[in-house]
Image 1: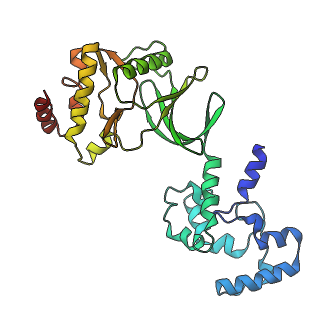
Image 2: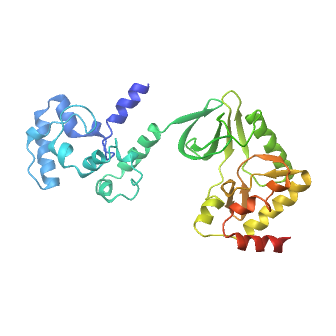
Length: 299
């Protein structure tokens, strides 16, 4: 199955055109001289240059074997892909909106769907309880695990893979069980968090609701600060402190979405004053003087 999929993928050209349906490839494999002549006439008309039947000799853009002069040397997409040392446009982060690819997509819109499918087929897969998810990107790495943005083809989720890499400043027990225990603790307190959707204990993976949007850390880098975020952090602290708890107040762990500030990590720890928001977390939220003044007003 994997070999079949790989062969099928190779028949999709660099630009997303399906070489399997190309008359040049069909004529070459079938040794069909009449089709070679017909294709040469058509391509001459389309490209405004003389193309002879002898030039219609091609096994496919990305398949070993003969190539037409255009596909081999003149195609701007093929040349661009080759210069960037990529396989296809699907591997290029500038694919969307690319003017070079747009010249082909304008006449053959299906090439974009082919490239998106190719990108999905080539993307790494991860499973949670035998359900397969395609990895879109790595969201980040924490002291407890790696978080990936994944999809099942219908929706997006966060898949967290527990790791066991050493951490100089933190001692762990059972990371997965701690994660689940902390989630229940914070959920019962009413801390806004992404929902826990599935747990795969043997693989030490959890599947969470994806809260779309930039983290507070990313927004602060852009110079954006909303006093309401601080009010919502303070509201969390008003629930956490009486319960004898702290969370990780680092701004990468918070995402504002539709007016609600979500704590997207599940970690919580026993309350210690030096690690609470006022004494530790606040220093990582930029525009500190503005934040400090706002926090005092909230008090």
